[in-house]
Image 1 (tube, rainbow, N blue to C red):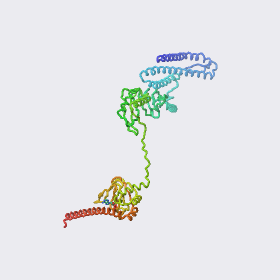
Image 2: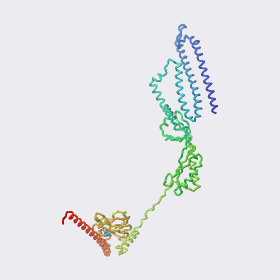
Image 3: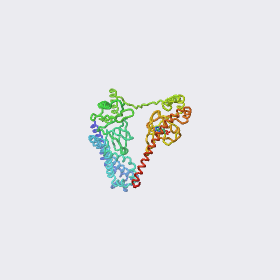
Length: 504
Ligand code: CMP
């Protein structure tokens, strides 16, 4: 196939080049005939490269002279064109021979396009200079190019983009970050398989079978991800399973499932690992290597499919986004009567309220409020004013008084115990601080609620009074003890001072 094309191209080249050579060889004959036979008839004499008027031969017109010069110039231009055609066809044929065949065998076909173009342009320019100078020896072409600043600017601006691409292409070729057949991904530019690298840009065949053409200048500025053709490139595929299934089993099943899949490399064992512990299950990651990376879309799909079937067989359950919603029923509002009944029931368990009639305890219950305190929160503070007492519904409190600058716990009170009665009965400031030891719920009973009960039930006053008296006694004892210790300490201190100063 290739040799047929070569033969065809060689035949075309030799015929074309031969024709040009024949024409070029025939031209001097034509010129000689024109110079010696045709123009002299119009009174023109060819004298050292220019046409003069032959004054001996009649009166030749200026028109004849102009026409002769024009024809002479046309012949020069024709010669230049023919020579250039010969050069171009030779360069193209040689280019095909060298780059189209030889470079292809080296396995670097992509270099041929760029190098061929660059070399061809150089040869064309040099050839044009030589041919032009041979036809017009009097005209200096070099200063025309080097001396003309404006021409330089115009050409520079016009070729800015092209030259930028060219140099970026040369840099790409020198660097060779990727080759034809590699899969490349360009940010915001898509991804696909490199189809060709030319001096202008790179052609990429996308996975939707479209052709993406990116100029070298643009490509040179991007960060490109390359998956080289001969390299073992890896892919990651994710899936999730529910927490119930054993990870060891999942790893085994998934690995076996994808191992035999087409295009999955046998050289490296696929990795199956837990990527995270997600909201709805274990998050897995499969890493596998491909023989042909350009088919990764199909292979990814096949890997997922194999996993699905294997999991189905092994009864492993995929996890999909789930959320457990606990619906909180609205708090049941107990009817007021029920609340009152439960409070009065509770009050009956408190020793001092035991003698109350049902009616009285219902009345009292109706006048109470419940409060909840967290652990460590003071419910009453020593020295504060107080006209309410408290019954502990649940929890535990500690009664504290200050001693030597510290808070001393003198008693603990529990469910169905009460406190705060001393200030309520006497109007004195709180005698101690009462702090919740854990989350504690109390019933608060105000003075106004108790007053009618005191009036109708003197026993109530007595029993509360007795308890208050007992507690006050204890407080007094503690205070006296503290005082004694203080005076002892003072005496001790006095003794030390006297001893120190040697006083009596
Ligand atoms: P009151 O003085 O109003 O405020 C502090 C409360 O602590 C006090 O009422 C009593 O109810 C309670 N209290 C004081 N001393 C004791 C004690 N020794 N044992 C139990 N409770 C006490």
